[in-house]
Length: 352
Image 1 (spheres, helix red, strand yellow):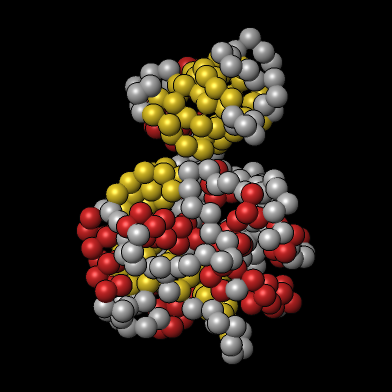
Image 2 (cartoon, one colour):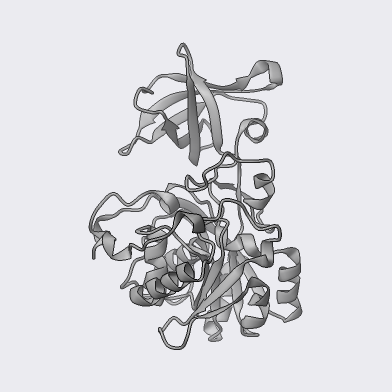
């Protein structure tokens, strides 16, 4: 299967650069998974009423932290940018990261972020180098590491948002139900939800559950091969509690539909089902590295709420695996022609 099979043309003007004033004001495109029937445009405000009364809606509750740090190399001039992508260990405090410009940053170098004069400063040493230029860095002990990161860091907006992050992004590039800190990119299908929408789900008696997958390189790494099957996904940390696994498995046993909010939720649920080797999810934690592309056999997910994704990306491949490549690309062409807003701050689609 060729990566180019997942290409589509998108006018730059359709890439949302800022969120709408109201989270739930986005448009929603309904797409039949089997390709039958017309594409139906509506508003995200309609989402609670679209669902079946016995659906179980599953969210990814991972919380974005300001993982983009600006600093300097000790003994060198010029600024460097570090994007923390995954915590490898707590003690010592080691992280996988991307560094820019990175070619000259070698193992053993010391990096400094912030200034002791402002009361927030972090020091780190480069301890390893990855296959595609990733670095491993080890931070020196600090009184409160994450407090310093919150003060020094910037919201890690995706590169297709052609502006610097703003104070408002700390709120809007975050779901209202986020609780488990660890993501460097938002699970964007969840950005449309408000407390009012969640309350309407509850009023209809629609059950909800949450899992955790900390978004890192596995979600946004570029595909550097020409053949889909050759791509390998970075692992991302996930967790499903016993309570949530029981709720999800109970719904599956009763023949109820599982509605996954976002591709990260899809990957978490299907990875956990593979661990159980049955049509149920296994409680636990670890690293999920499941790459879903057309031909995949979905065991858990019955419907997906998702934003519109980059051409030739693993996220688009996953949605095509669920809804059929031709069917999904037809929906994307419809979205382009009808000027839907694309990517993280854009509109959404429900594939059911």
